[in-house]
Image (cartoon, rainbow, N blue to C red; front, top):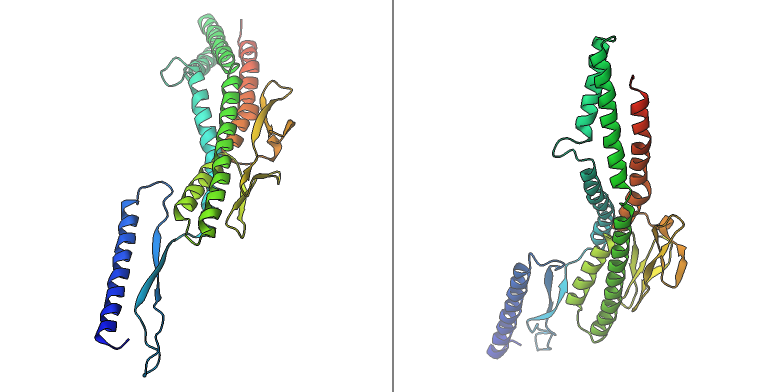
Length: 308
């Protein structure tokens, strides 16, 4: 391609390729704040060599295709951290709701009652024989006991909201897993035809990230491009183009446990180790019962520790 026409054709291919590169750059810039979008890169390859009297001659440059710039290892690490963040955010939000029951933000709550109770003890220590100090201590002890009992009573109905949130989390997990299975099918269809399924892979990665914040998962990609998602018990939540649903079951304590929809009487709570679902179960089954135990026995202890 040493003729003037050939040289012009090479120049044309270079201009067209660089124009495509500018379009890809513009796409990246315009989607810089788009959730789930992965930066694109234009792949360039040299044109087919053409035989000439001087030997093979190049024919310019060809824009071969646009691919995602995605690091699978970093993506897996991010999803791993999403699982822990989802767990601790769920605990934080639940404890924020619980904190309101202690009524300390606006005054007149448990902290104030505790302060007055210990101050009454200090007054009595300064004058052990003082009748006024004894009566004051008795009154402050009763006030503190009332406050503790009130906190206990307000904590008692809390398990119901936590069960509702567990059910909501399970419903979200089912939606995300179904979406991933659907995107698996679309990715296979697009890539089988020879195209890059960039948009579908972006959508799947975003759904996977959102799923990671709800429950701990392990993932690996098959040769056909589909993604397999497994839970902590080793069973597949997504296998190729098929998703498996979770559900909730009533346990002996009157709460909602998580189970597979096709095994509705077998709880998998013990195999859930991260995600918002784990945080909610911890708050409901461990943290709140601990608060309730403390606020149940302390009122009697406060009254028993005061003098008549």
